[in-house]
Length: 143
Image 1 (cartoon, rainbow, N blue to C red):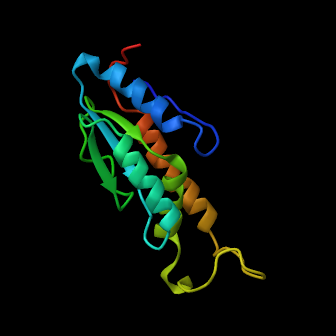
Image 2 (image 1 turned 60 degrees about the horizontal axis):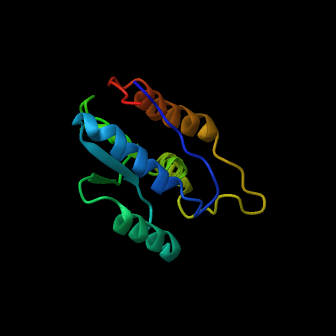
C-alpha cells in the first residue's frame, strides 16, 4: 500500500509528475486508472484545464470522470493503481453534494451568511472517508 501526494501551485507540473510516477509504478502490470473528480459545468476556466489534462494523459491510462463521490472507489480492485486528480476538486464536489437542499440558491460566503449547522463536520468526515479508503488500499508499491 502506498499513498503519494503531490502538492504545489497551479500549473506547477503536479499532474505530469504524478502521471510519470504512475506510469513507472505500473510496469508491474497493474492498470493505471486516473480518477478525475470534475465540477466543470458553468466554469469555462476549469473546463479548459480538464481538457488540457485529458490531452496530456497517457493513452494507456484508464480514465474515470467521477460525477458523484460516494461510489467513486467501489468499482476498482486493489490491483488498480489509482491516480486521483485532484484532491481540491474532490473536496469541492463533496461540499456541493453535502450542501443542504433547503439552502440551494443561497450564496456560500456572502455577507452575513453562515454555514448550515454541522456542514463543515459532514464535509470533513466525507472527505476523510475517501482519503482513508485510498490510503487503506492494498497493493504492492514498485519503488
